[in-house]
Length: 320
Image (tube, rainbow, N blue to C red):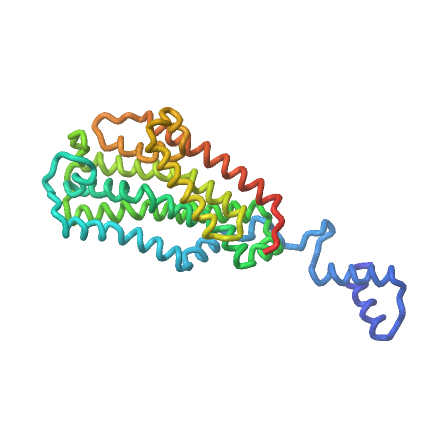
């Protein structure tokens, strides 16, 4: 007897006041439940596919509509203009050919981009990555919406993966937006001249733009450890600010320890020790050793943090 026929007989029995034994009622109720939910013999709802849940495009649109995302991207785009105003108010010499990266910032557009990346690398860029990754799972938990996502049902590993990918895309957008805007602003104010390194090397504009592109790639890879740590903290706490602040605090402490020369070779194991290795690209003779070490270190840290985050989230008791 089919489920539809069983359901019809159950309804008829109820309408006519017919008493049915409990076992039969359970069978009819089960048939009614399966009929209403269209559940297959394997227990899965017909048409359900885990791969169709929490689509990346939907998650990205939702994140882009959030005020914090818009403010972060707006701040990143505004920073180069703030730097230009600061140099215009001050007494910057556009013809300077010696000094540090700050002194050479107004020498050309590439130098201005280098300065923008240099001043934002200590706090702003790690904070942006920590914000996007640390706010993922923790914010859903703080809104008490995480349990509903998992009850949809969306597999836990997919929730974590989709949110991590969305956060990575937003972080890359921010990290690319800053040098792009800085390059455009620099060309307008300071011209498309050669990039001048503190050692006096002059790198052609086309070569310096390529070097800036490689520097962006390196910065994205190097900040992967911040992303992994922020994601781990995001699954450990229901407080988004705690996850974001914790990752930023670790980055700051690591930078402080890196300044202590008494630690000697131990500083090589700090995740921020090679943060500025990309500056070696602004030279005629590039040494790739520090960049290779920095990329390897960041990848190892990011992998460990990501695996711990996945393991913890898979076993976590979701109550909010």
